[in-house]
Image 1 (cartoon, helix red, strand yellow):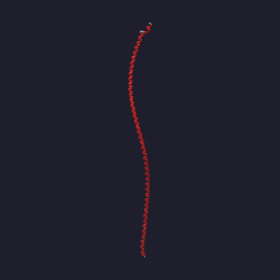
Image 2: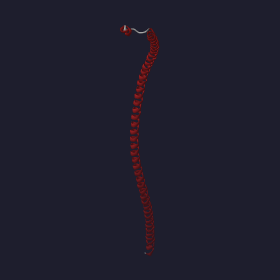
Image 3: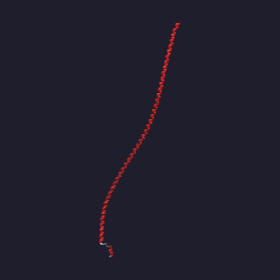
Image 4: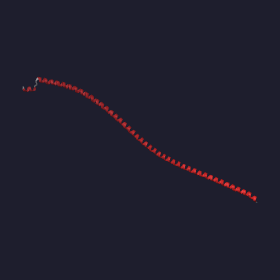
Amino acid sequence: MVLQDENFVSKEEFQAVEKKLVEEKAAHAKTKVLLAKEEEKLQFALGEVEVLSKQLEQEKLAFEKALSSVKSRALQESSKKDQLITKCNEIESHIIKQEDILNGKENEIKELQQVISQQKQIFRNHMSDYRIQKQQENYMAQVLDQKHKKASGTLQARSHQRPREK
C-alpha cells in the first residue's frame, strides 16, 4: 500500500495541479495570441522595412545618378572655364604684342615726323639761301648792267665827242 500511495496523488493535489494546468493553458493561449499579434506587427514592420529599403535604394540610385550628372556637368564647366581662361590669356598676350608693335610704329612715325620737320627746315634754309643768292645775282646783274650801260654810254659819249675833236 505504501507503494500504491506513492503512485497516487490526492484529489485535492490533483485538482490544484489541474487548476494550475488550466491557468497555464489559458496564460499560454493568451501568450500565443499576443505572440501572434506581435508576429503580425513584426511581419508588417518587416514588410514596411523592405518597402522602405527598396525605396531608399531607388532614391540612393537616383541621387547617385544626379550626383554623377552634376559632377560631370561641373567637370565640363570647369574645363570650359579653363579653356576660356587660356583663350583670354592668349588674347591678352596678342593684345600686348599688338600694343608693342603699335608703340614701335608710333615711335617710328614720331622719328619720321622729326626727320620731315628737319628736312623742311633744311629746305626752307636752302630756299632762303637760294632767294638771297638769286637777289644777289639779280643785284649783281643790275649793277653790272648799269656799269655796262654807263660804260657804253660813256664810250658813245666819248665817241661822239672824239669826232668833234677831230
